[in-house]
Length: 132
Image (cartoon, rainbow, N blue to C red; front, side, top):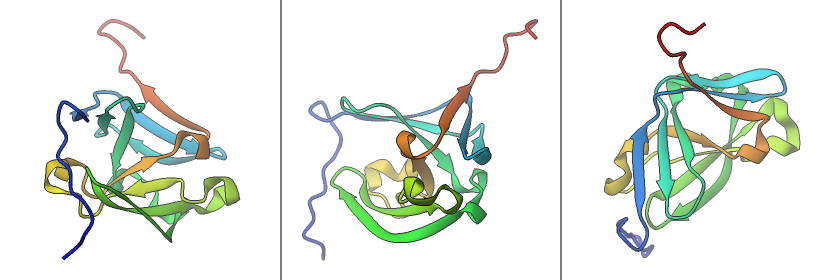
């Protein structure tokens, strides 16, 4: 049994998870690392929003799992990946919750990227009807 605290999001520490209707593309060194139309946007307290991308939409061939891990009392244990072609800058650039706490089950096996360890995380809106 773990002695790590488990907290439930609430008014004092709100967390919401919503489907992002935009196409989300993550790039590093001219390569597309992730490209999805199925991202979830997690908003937690006063932190910037984070895009959680399904593994199936991440180029796993560019990644190397690391031994690094962290713990969030709201989400659980996070595992990390480096983006191999990015070198030192891209070390532990990605985190994922493989077994999140029940309240955060929506982010299970999705991957999130540190914005300062990739070149860009773009949210591309679909053009309105009639626009080109």
